[in-house]
Image (tube, rainbow, N blue to C red; front, side, top):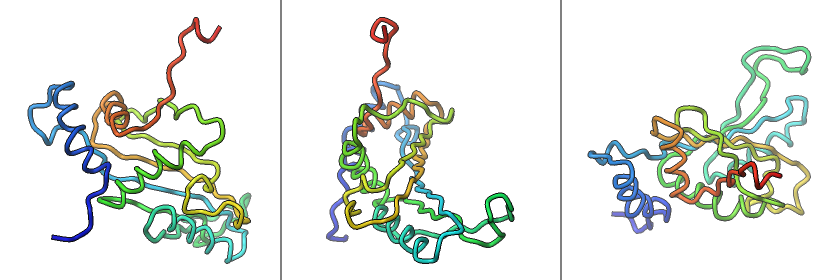
Length: 190
């Protein structure tokens, strides 16, 4: 047995969220309860930038995720973007296990609230219970010092769940603490 403590969200999921979902959704088997299977963080890099820019982007993505990022390369050449086959055009990290739970905790409780004028995240799911969110500036994460960086990275974060419907996925993420935007009624909008 290792001395490392279990991530907070993983413990919360096992002790509170599974019983809550079994009670509200009526799951008979514990394996029917939806869970988060992986989190994918992806960023695009301008291929015409110098090598130092690409190394900085990979380093920052590694700091944010807690695991080394993989450089993605172009599969085809696109002349309009000055992109040749094999040139680096992005970086990505796939998080599973404890790293995934730790990242989600930092993302939900530290990074999202630090966005200026934050009112919650959109309620749009992909139809299969998975959630995607785009971040325009990576300096919202506490691991990145905002004053010392000259680059600004945008990134896409995909939270992949085992839920079969959007309602199940939304309920799972809501119980974990994802701050969804409140729906406005017609009277409030007027």
